[in-house]
Length: 290
Image 1 (cartoon, helix red, strand yellow):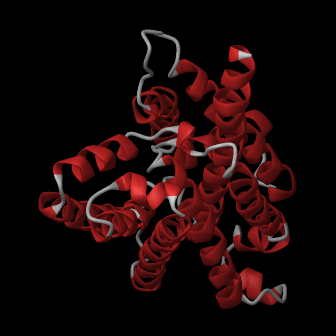
Image 2 (cartoon, one colour):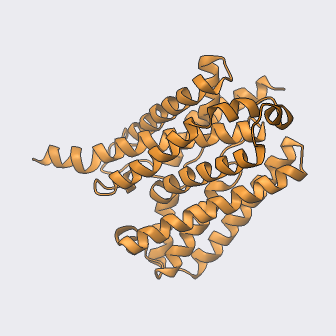
């Protein structure tokens, strides 16, 4: 009976969460890289994770600094999800606004990093005024963990992420058109502004749901699209997008397993593992594009 409890109540929800979260974050990274035509774009680089985290921090403070109140009550859960979504959307809208004024990709990356720093600064202020229990809860959440989704929450988490993933698959044609520039996409009959807005909503939704449940997970959204490109050697989203989803799901699951390797009754924080797999890929991409 004990192994059934461990598998059904702990390991199975974590595996499902890791698969869906990895696919979602990798998809967000690919869509942002295509939209901005920037190989170093991603939810964490552009501060979208930080925006979602800022929304969650507001909710924690509103609940008196107790993370458990927000995560285990229906109203608190909805508040956290909506706050993460609003935070992610606001940051993405700001980035889109700057992208129309700043054509230099490096400058846009710097602006994204600065927005992330501003969000993290606001989070630090909120934690300063929160209770000791609230600060501890937020720190644990911020380390990243696929164990935050219980078996009861899996249906809702799966539904929202699958809706976002299916919606992204329906954007394959516009994404391929945007690879060659906005002017070319418009000549093909693509409404660029509408397409950007749709991609904005999909990216914000997927980033928000994963961040709300699992914390701000680094590197998966940034590195996995490049891994998929290296494997397939193509930029055609008809093949690249599904491959990115599969790679993201697999890598997230591997990272979750690695978190349990030094078994001592606990587990390594997820964000201590993802950079080990993601950083070498990004370094390789930067060196290749010198």
